[in-house]
Image (cartoon, rainbow, N blue to C red; front, top):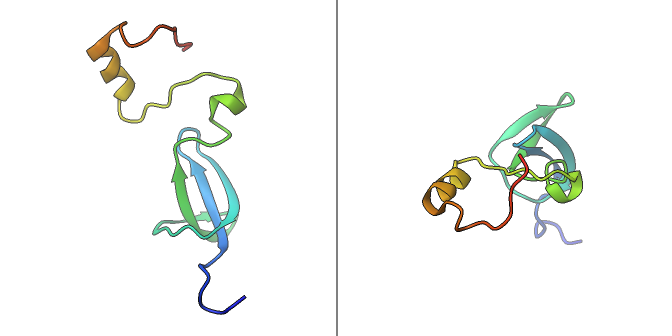
Length: 88
């Protein structure tokens, strides 16, 4: 490979913000935040949904609502917007 034309491919920590699950993988993604994980300093990427919290992989239906959007929608549209019931 040619020198100086490829992005920096390094280890990065991805953090699931809904359940605080963290994992290390390699990526070229750029970030300003860092975190100490397992005794080393890594760049940090924050995610809202990963395989640890996604209903398809966990088998549990839950709503990830970080800004009150679901409640706002239900207040505005009531029962008109939904034909199924959500398991709490």
